Length: 450
Image (cartoon, rainbow, N blue to C red; front, side):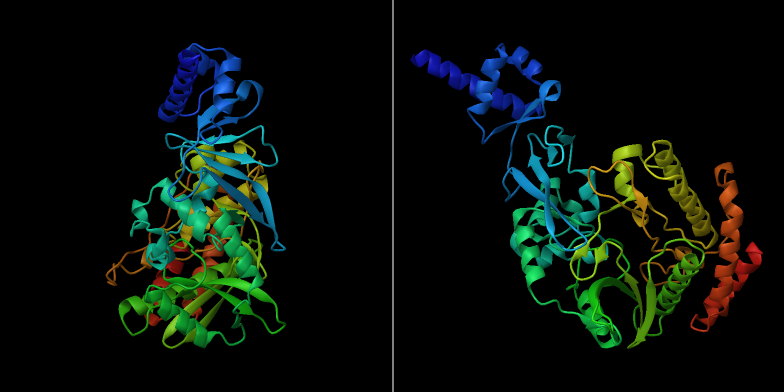
């Protein structure tokens, strides 16, 4: 009897060690490696439910060793926040040995989704950019590495699961973030008077510069903060606000010009039937503020699911050369509609023609949530002539715009985008808020395109 007990104990340990070292395995592989029958294999697994999980059904079933990710347990609940602000259970995220994850959606629990790292749909939720750099300092109790570039997948998951109550999109990760969201929803929402936001914007801008960003974590390096506004009818809405430096330096003047340029481009695109973020400009205290309405938020607490092209590329198609190339691959796989493909191709051309050199895949977003097979293009944002952005030290780089080229796949989009670009540079040149120096640049570019 003792020898039998020792044999069982040894088999349990060998199974666990194998799964921990080599990751999820099929029953057939494990039976061969351990020289045991299927009934014995599953008895050994069921005897240690705190360590081993059976994932999937029938021929697709795998056994995996569970692990705790930093201060979390091995199983992290995942929720959706509806447009009405209600939290809905979406499934569970399991951390597996040696370093992978699996998402078990409630909609199809027998079809788990395995990922070598964190699921791609969490990419955009990570604290990043200007508003993410102080996350570790702000939440020092989590003991995260000071630089977000040094974070592991487990670090990211803990940040999302413990302080992720107000991140990009409509996903909510972890029990603690769920509780924080409920507290946020029950509490009184501090809203800025949308008819007179200037004073509060100046306070928020200074707080952001001082390393205490208000609002949610959004990507990008341009200084910004999040805010909740109350309009004259009492309706609440969420906005992101970029702002320029103060003073009469070259950097301050140039960023004022660029924020006005961004507002003009978004306005022009909306006028021509292309969805673009709603925005307005506010001047106060020597700063220019560009306020844009968040399209992933509905009123005070409602949310919409969004995902960036960057995250989609990582999972579905691989990195493309530009927006258009990636959109063509998505259209071939029926991930986007023909209309969205056409719009993205126009935006690619327009971006080239207005000297937007910052057309990276993180600056194009779609409406989507896990389980859906197709994405829908969200309003465009961050569309401005970034070629002329000052250097990190604030110097004038004196870059000049040259007539861009295009390949045959953009032939049908180029002419229409060229007309838009000519209208755009005309508006920039004629706008009295733009500095004389930049209006000269606009005139030169207008002449080149014309």
